[in-house]
Length: 113
Image (cartoon, rainbow, N blue to C red; front, top):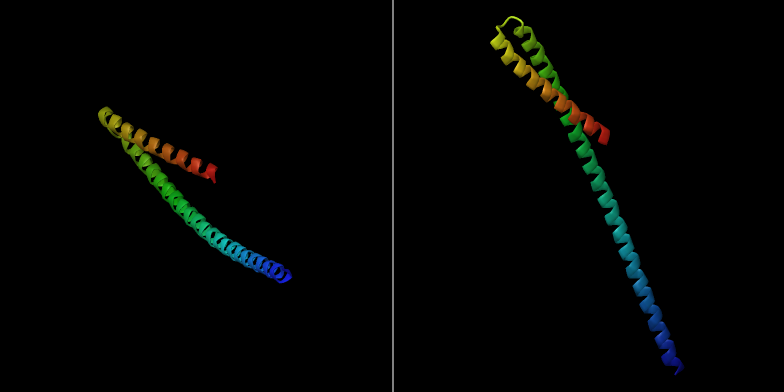
């Protein structure tokens, strides 16, 4: 009886060691996966920030181009007839509206960062 009890205790101990060893492996695997996912997230954040900066520069460039067009149209407008002035005014208003929208968009993105 004592031998049987001793064998049962040894088997239970071995089973516990095996279970705990397996749990340690699972924990280590989960930690490694977590580190890899964290690295991927950091890389994704960097890509997103780089893309944001690229878009911001493109918006700033477009705003500057629109400002030049507006100035050019305003200078031409003064030498034209009233019909032509009205057409220029419509183009100017449209460009100013585009600039305002781009500026609002950029402000929105900047406030989210």
